[in-house]
Every structure is written in structure tokens, then in C-alpha cells.
Image (cartoon, rainbow, N blue to C red):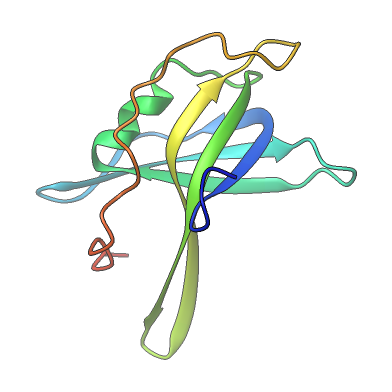
Length: 116
């Protein structure tokens, strides 16, 4: 783990979705990772704003390490959780990083007003 408020996952990219523009200045791009756990999970992550560019150099089948934050919110008495990636490293078969990614750092804490 990078620090107490961020988490890490390692796995293989299963799918990368198209960039979505939700408002004039809010963009989002999602991707799906199959984790390398004892019981592999298929997990969806999202990148927002400038972090969307992190996915440009990736393709399905790439092995990556993802640093992310858990983001939660309530909307109309329903609760939503997103895994918001802020760092994505492409990895070699031996676990070493093979690319230097654009790391904009964690998203600002006041980024809760995300449209649906």
C-alpha cells in the first residue's frame, strides 16, 4: 500500500472503456482488471480528469499495478462505491515496472460532486 488512504492491486487488464465526458470539465474512463489473488476477481476501476491519460498506453492483456482510492457517496438514499485509480504502472513478467506513467497524484479530496 502506498499510504493509509490508498490501496494497490496487481492484475491483468481485461477491458478499457472509451473516454466519457460527463460535464464540460469532468471526464472519466473506466477499465477492468482481473486480479492475481488466490481467488482472482474481475474489478472495475475508474480514472477521472487528467488521470484518464494513464490508460492511453495500455491494452487488454497488459499486467499492471494500480494504486487507487476508495470513493463512496450517497445519492437519493442509495450508496455508491468507486475505485478511483491515480497511478497505473505497466509491469513485466518478473514484476518490474516497464513504463514510467504520468502520475498526477491522488485526486483532490473535494472531488465528491461527481455526476452519474
